[in-house]
Length: 324
Image 1 (spheres, rainbow, N blue to C red):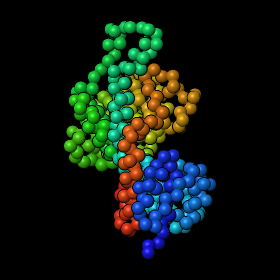
Image 2 (image 1 turned 30 degrees about the horizontal axis):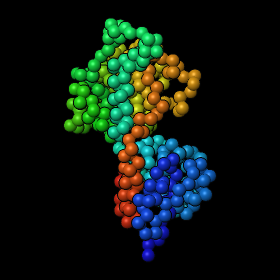
Image 3 (image 1 turned 180 degrees about the vertical axis):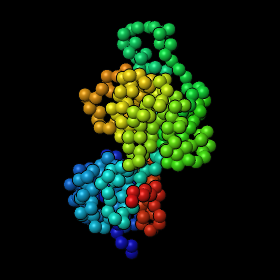
Image 4 (image 1 turned 90 degrees about the horizontal axis):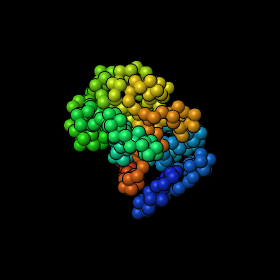
């Protein structure tokens, strides 16, 4: 008989579904715990695996995992991001996996919704509605279109590619920016991040979806905003720290760029004293891009079960991350 395998699961939603999906696997137990580090610490000592989100993998929890999780061999993130694992570390010989591109479709839809709202001036129209002010000519003078516009997808993984598919339906040109140059059927070209400065001036729309790594932190700063067209809009659905928020605020205040749609921020929740709240060329979205698709939980459960089956069999896991 195989040795029993204990999986500690700490998620706001998904542990029950994972336990049900793994109920037929012999000698596998999925134990659901609260997200507080002390609750996880009480169960982690004899655990073989931990299922959690990047946001819950705090420095305090990482210390507990390093100190107490002697048997731990695998950590499964139900999130795409994994910067907290990079920042706080995981025990040696523990494999880290994530959710892959599960969230890409809704996040891409959200990004395009922000783009359309900015380009078609929906926030302005809503302000005019509240004033009961019907001014066709003044409103029309500020409108633009996505047809023929150039999308610069900075980050050309799951989200970037999903955004590109949707952008092509609006007859946009697509240029991708990734870790390295490559060919892709969804883009006219994909250049390396080191060539961002070359392609940025020609962009009408920029969608940021890079992972947050040492080399991507602050990738958009004063120089990048200065290089953009004054008519361009930027949308960030990646991580807040990809952008120098102070430089973004100055660019928006001085109208060096036309607008920004933000779903992520350097500090979340966005502080009440942030100037971003007061700017009329900004759309504030409370980090909800990945929500709203009822199939997401099923997709996450399928990834979780697949990796549990592989883990039991000693087979290679899917969506393995290298944070060495």
